[in-house]
Amino acid sequence: MTQELLSTQQSPVCRVCEVELHVEINWFPSLAAKGNRICKSCVRQQYKEWVRAHPDRMEVYRLARRGKYAYEKIARLEVIRLLGGKCSWPGCSCSDSRILQIDHVKGHGLLEIRKYGTHYYQHVLQSILHGQKNKYQLLCPNHNWLKRFENNEQPHQIIEAEQLPT
Image (tube, rainbow, N blue to C red; front, side, top):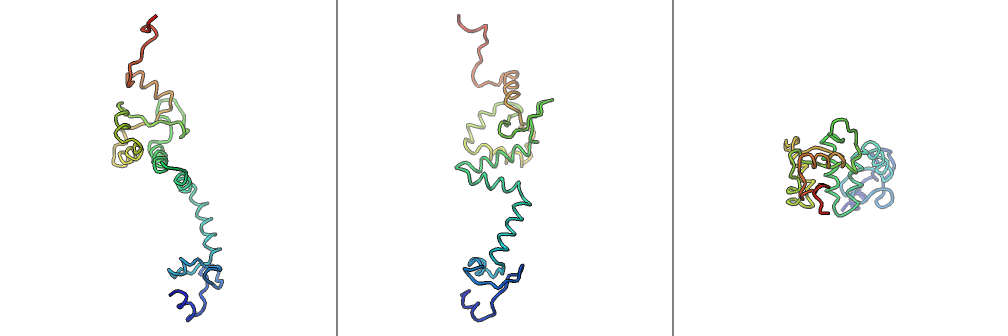
């Protein structure tokens, strides 16, 4: 149908660079079918400009192509961003998203992790977006373990050195 339309009318021109358009040569068939008059080189140029203007969104797309749990990776990064992007322990400046851990302020996060399994970060993200931001905090691994020890949040009993059998 698009071919018939093009043969009865004048050859269309690109709306950006005004080059004559020919399907399969310099015009994507999907764009021709929609009536979008833009040549392949202009589409590519606009895409490159968009990528340069949106590096944060491109990181999300790159992560999405990496594997099975891509949405969890994206959700985790978004949770880290929403929680401030650095360790919330006073005086700590750790901001490496690879090691930051999402901690439950009142403890017992293991129950939630077991309940939601591989969809845990999506659950945390939804909780934060629905106003439960103060339920979670970001901690670096060292401070997370300190908090767990000080608040006795260990899932298993820790045996002190004095209590070890000799």
